[in-house]
Image: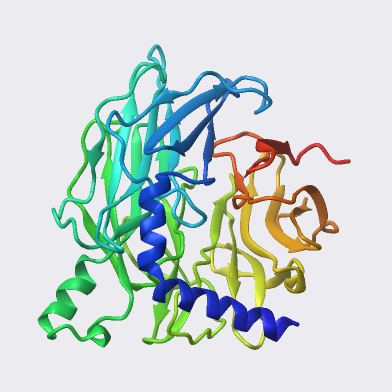
Length: 401
């Protein structure tokens, strides 16, 4: 069964690449999707961004997600918003004393050509009442190549955005007469703002040879630059995970699974940094030796062994991690599918990821379901899950049954 699931994951990744024209057409017809994002402000209110009919909409909840305010439109003109699985909108709330919260939203706009896309950004400086005109953040002016899978980190007035960018691969392949093997994968680009998104520095390339379509994860330590986790192409063929400080671009290998494939798995990882600086990350690999979800942590130069997570036979996938709250408290969440239903599964550690509770199911759904995501900047482990049948639900994993 495990081998069957592994082969199926490769088939789906390859099939999507072969049938991308149909997929792209569907994107332009729907202009939205189930992928949402939530962020907390200092009062505990939750801010949600979702995509519908070509627009991003932001709403606010003061009862931990039970109800939300009337949504406010972000982008004035409709566009094809990428809001599915790995390619999803982002939201953060920036606060300073005596001023209204600045609500920032980032997303990816699909262009007409298959794979062509742009990174978009808008902000509200009046506490979510209205949004400034949307801007395109990739500064190369190329509308026929990909700029996608945007990730966001916020710390004070500083914003960092990272995305997967095709400008380097496009240039290399064009110079080589169109040969695809002239450049492996895509590249990671970043852009930064020091004034809550009023202005941005020029784009800069952080790394060559990223996987083309696995989500990125940015996390900020208590001090210092954010760290980025992404699926990288090592030695031209191994699609394992890399970790880098965005200020230096020095790459550390975060997983050594040796997954040698030529297709994109469409399966990124997730990163969280605890108050003590310990880094926690989760990921998926299809490597024959140990396929499935894995977790590990790092403190200084001490890297823990990888620990298996979830039930591969139930298609355990799309893991996320949260670290904070009580000292050494860590939570994992992921999605499984069996008996015709999706299950939202979790486990908890109270010793910094050394040992773990039993896995448990906190929710299920028999219709289409988004990937689980932890609420950004929440002081406790709030897990959000958006499904077609039940809508957005928020679970406080700190409240144990």
